[in-house]
Amino acid sequence: MTGGARGAGTASDDRSGTPPTDRVRVRRLAERGRYDRTTVEAILDEGYVCHVGLAGDTGPIVIPTAYGRDGDELYLHGAPANATLRGASTGVEICVTVTLVDGLVLARSAFHHSINYRSVVIVGRAAEVTGTEEKRRALSVVVDHIVPGRSVDARAPTDNELRATRVLRLPLDEASAKIRTGGPKDDPEDMDLTVWAGVLPLRTAAGPPLADTGRPASMEAPDYLVDYIRPTHRSAMGDDGV
Image 1 (cartoon, rainbow, N blue to C red):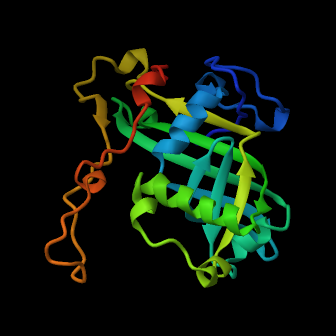
Image 2 (cartoon, rainbow, N blue to C red):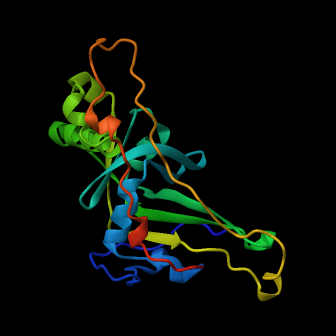
Image 3 (cartoon, rainbow, N blue to C red):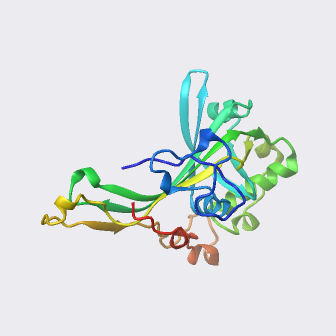
């Protein structure tokens, strides 16, 4: 199996593109790299959780967290005491990754087993959001990223809740995608083995909404939950078959 993405985003829709800096160039299986902003944004918009990594005071650390995209920027949030976000707010370089798993690739040999995936890596320096209005908007972006339309129904954060939340803004200036699609790539001498080979597709599906016991008995779940479907753009990503 091969790992995540290294590359950079551009405004171009070119399938491969050119990374703006050498440090973000896809080197391992470079043909899987995508540097166009359309692909990067589509993967970010479909994901739920990102992993934030940096070199902290006690060593390297990576934590998962929810996020939201607003145009060319990614918003991260957490408690003010969160050590990773506190460190990221000082202007150090951070790395944010998002990975979507689309299928399990089963080859005739154990060596060629793999995973079909779409991933994004973002590298840069985050800035802390201190303005009240942008902070409110950023948190709405995060809420609506998970469940579109939810921020309209939910109570907005109070001033105390805003003070109890750290929000960071990370530009997508250095962001790339890396994608694997297609079936197994077995060695020619293994093609006649009596071993099943192919792809087991995977997807995230929502179940029926489960109401909290404190809700009014007559209240129905909103349509955006009953009809919840995560947007997917995997069909537009192409099939590299590698």
